[in-house]
Structure formats: structure tokens, C-alpha cells
Length: 113
Image (tube, rainbow, N blue to C red; front, side, top):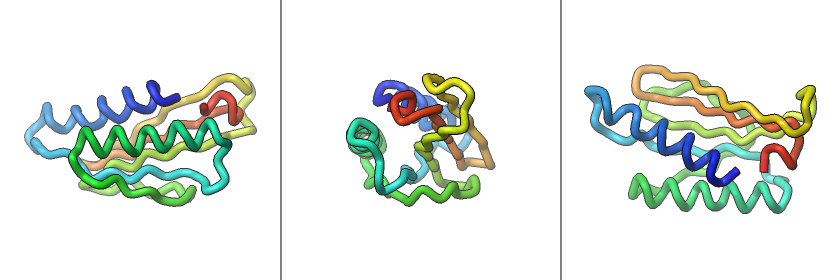
């Protein structure tokens, strides 16, 4: 998951630089407090990597999915046990002016890792 989230985050951060805004958005990573150990390690790595990429402090938010907010990059890591394939995961993105909401959903804790 670290590499998947890392690539999603890098692509999302680079996208605005290709346009007219030329600035990196503030980053908020959302996740549940009771993540499985493997997921927690992946989220910790993501937060550290994004802080290095942006040279900014990355904010950690709770599991509540936020709306897309201009000027912010929200990345939500969500386990979704209702998914038909327990090994599948999806990555959805919503853009709003210079803001992004990226949701990574796994069909199980193992898939989200």
C-alpha cells in the first residue's frame, strides 16, 4: 500500500503544478484510529513521505470523509468490508478548483494494506 498511496499522492501533488496555480496544496491524511498494524505503518510512511515531498507538516485527520476543499489535498484510507472482492481496492479522486479528495478503499484490511 505504501507504494500505491505514494504514487497517488505524488501524481495528485504534481497535477496542480502542471496548471496555472504552481503551488502544492496542504495535505491532510484521514484514517481510523484503530488501524491494523500493517495499515498503520503504511499510513505513517505516507505521512512522512508527503511531508518530505511538500516540505510541509502533514495533518492527520479522523476517519470522517471530508468534502473536497479548495487548497487542500485530502487522502482518506478506508477499509470497506462490503466490497465483493476482499482482495480488491479502489482509488477515487475528486477535484475542486485547486483541491483534491483521494479515497483509497480496500475490500478488507489485507487489501488496503
